[in-house]
Image 1 (cartoon, rainbow, N blue to C red):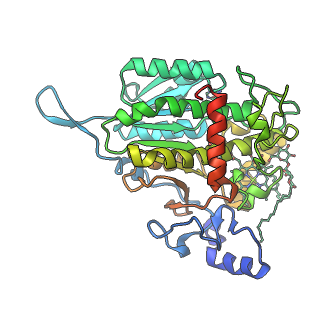
Image 2 (cartoon, helix red, strand yellow):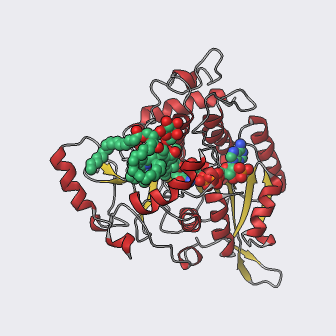
Image 3 (cartoon, helix red, strand yellow):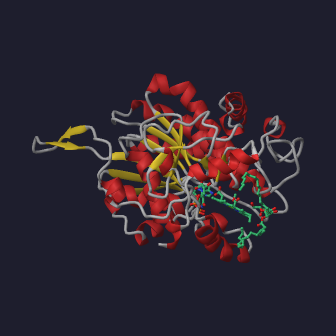
Length: 396
Ligand code: LMG
Ligand code: NDP
Ligand code: PMR
């Protein structure tokens, strides 16, 4: 196949990069030289670390790898496995929906689709063929801290256990000239993608602690575009949190900037900044809670899913050219189905229990621990994002 024939290995690239003495050590999301944070011993050898993945996941990858469930006595006295219970935010389209589908299909998971548009989510679940007994739609608008609190209260009332939480929803406003705001007056991209999820995960942490499931996980979706150690992360505008003066001021556009670094509003940058916050938050959760709770905290780059609703606000020409550009030029393209199977692995695969990891996939669909950029792995920034965010969402 042409796609596979033209991909080349890290070793080729590494040589090239060495020669030009570039500081950045990855290309197209895959580390080249600097293995500061990279542990590739478990899942891939260097030669397998090619920069694209073009094959689909094997369907059984998810079906056969779910964590062993807690056993419960069935009415007739036989032991049965209890279903895992997973909340996925933004499961009404794209990656979230594909993940819900992949997990539901195994019959081992009940998916709580946490969505802002109830009807859309119901329709999406139906058209994806998810059977009724495998999902529940619950209302959640991440652009309102009240809605997040209400969702958590409703969830607790439902009496369901919580084994895995997937923070997946996001908005991207690449063409916005002016900022828009959440119900709480916070710039929309960071407010939704980071702060809404931050509050949600903090409020649900106890439920996860109480779960008796063998592997409890909190997964926060990250991205290559927030990582400036990649080519994709160097396409302007680049992510940069600066000294976080804007975030500390509440991103309200009144007495503070709407951008985390205090600069002028830029929707594309705000999205990329929010993804850095997502990846830093995962690491800070890991540092604070992994030892005490045993919960696995993870992030991932699902691949470039160029066909999703994420690009709905981009100009039509972009939406037309972006998928073929990613398919044939960067070869970073993945289908929604494929990416959903990848995220479903991070939810349920017994071999992906390592905490504090940012997962990516090779072109043969095997997962590996990817390297975050310097800023996205800066632990003092992680702490600072955490502390400021706590104040903004009313937890401190
Ligand atoms: C911004 O523009 C907008 O201003 C902003 O509003 C927002 O929309 C944002 O990210 C979203 O984009 C980005 C703009 C500028 O990029 C473009 O979209 C312009 C396209 C230019 C086309 C270039 C030709 C490419 C050929 C592809 C042909 C197929 C057409 C498909 C197009 C689909 C759309 C993508 O971007 C630029 O400035 C372009 C230059 C970016 C390159 C950055 C590379 C940095 C390199 C850093 C080095 C990293 C180390 C690697 C070393 C490698 C050595 C081999
Ligand atoms: P989609 O737009 O298809 O999905 C985003 C989901 O988030 C939608 O279901 C949307 O709901 C939901 N959402 C948006 N705002 C809110 C809100 N205020 N409250 C609740 N839900 C909300 O995009 P993707 O599937 O591509 O994105 C999913 C994740 O993947 C994001 O975190 C994104 O950053 C990440 N990602 C995507 C990549 C890609 O190439 N597409 C690459 C790397 C990462 P609704 O359906 O109602 O609009
Ligand atoms: Mg990018 C070289 C590989 C590569 C990869 C894997 C992506 C992923 N992109 C790559 C390269 C390039 N992109 C190059 C060379 C360009 C300049 C032509 C380019 C441009 C570009 C734009 C304008 N790319 C984009 C945009 C967007 O608006 C998307 C974005 O930044 O959203 C925040 C985007 C993306 N490119 C990706 C991925 C995964 C995206 C979606 C970003 C995300 O969801 O985080």
